[in-house]
Amino acid sequence: MIALGIDIGGSGIKGALVDTKKGEMITDRLRIPTPKPAKPKAVIKVLKRIVDHFEYSGPIGVGIPAIVINGVTHSAANIDDKWIGYSSQQAMAEATGCPVTLANDADVAGVAVMRFGAGKGKQGTVMIFTLGTGIGSAVFVDGRLVPNTELGHLYLRNQKNDAENYAAERIREEKNLSWKQWGQRLNTYFQHIEFLFSPELIIIGGGVSKKHEEFLHYIKIRAEIVPAELRNEAGIVGAAVLAAESV
Ligand code: BGC
Image (cartoon, rainbow, N blue to C red; front, side):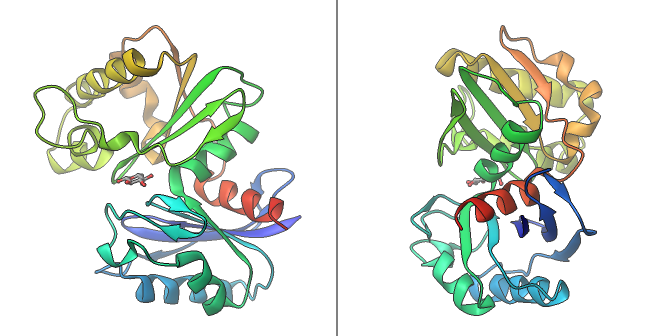
């Protein structure tokens, strides 16, 4: 079926119509800068603009950088604290007049990668990490998602801050790190992840994964580590897939 997928990010809110069987966007992606501050009302207004732009009515899937349980957001990293404890899914449905399926952005991207990308058919513990403004994580065991893992917020030894404030793509840009310097930070992070979870496979997503040849070789772990290999944006595609499945 066709569904609208929307990805709420720290810097942009992106949406497109998706063929959920093929896992492909069938329209260009519309990107609108994330309002600052990214309070629920302002962000939901942008969602409505995206729906109007596509003249769409039907199920909508939305990924958001927050813990999401039964449609309620329970954390807010890189978005406004007003999201904490907010009935976000219901508010989005009311504003757009469409049924909305809301989930964590990394979980949503993980669904697309497991279905159409490097995770297709993979059994055992598969972990997907999105490197962007933060570090998002999605953990699958024999193809089943363990939701809301939030592994970007691990603390690393000798770091007084969340791992994502040490190793996210945003930090590479802000601190002007070389690929090697950033790769070494990722190495510290993923060695710790491997020690804790012993996954069979780690998949790296986020825009920077297109440049994987620059940094993946600095990550020295037992597990196989590969880029997400999705032609389309995983966040948008995965959100649309979840929406289609909830109908
Ligand atoms: C948030 C996660 C999100 C990740 C990637 C983190 O800061 O806590 O919910 O998945 O960023 O956007």
